[in-house]
Length: 278
Image: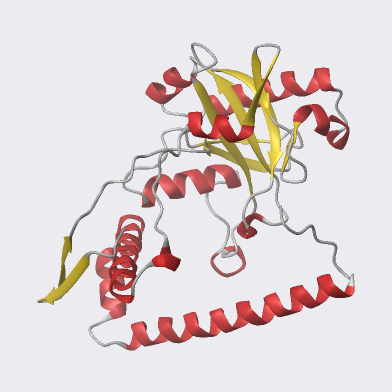
């Protein structure tokens, strides 16, 4: 995608030219998710069972001490509570959908130790699906250092933070408590047509350009949520902060490699159970 990119630095600005660029069609939507995560049974869609990655509610009931007949009503109650946290126009859109099925879904390493689910909803017919993702939100890692957030519900804290920092957040961002009220969750679309970059396939020039875009995006987010003047004064005009971040990144990458080596050793010795190839 970025192989035809040329970059020149003019007075601190990057001028970009994409040669022979062909736009990639957006396919990361709920219909695409349905083709991978859904199956038709007796003319109705449900979430397919793909343990251990995807475990539908019909196979999960015993885990939470609920019968299959109790799971769906409980989820519908959760859905109504979540819907109430949305802005009026977005809540109105979501009222056109009804809950069809739910499943626990394994997600990335950043969510290890927390619960995550997906919910299949249906609009006008079976070809009008909407997948939502429910992720558990725990206390911020910053709490021991800067104090607790003014948002007592961790799901709300995550949602309000994203709305503040992002130029355009997921329209279905919301929050709720779990059946266990001590657990907090936030909801969002599972597939919202976001694009992604194939970093491994980038040439150095393209990777540099992509890194600068990420840097500008992060800086804008901090400026939206904090005091941009104070941040600028703190950073100053020297490269001290840049050097510190680079040093931290290199040491963090080295730590990741050491952690992975220990993980592999634990799996090979039998101390940790792991399923490969899923």
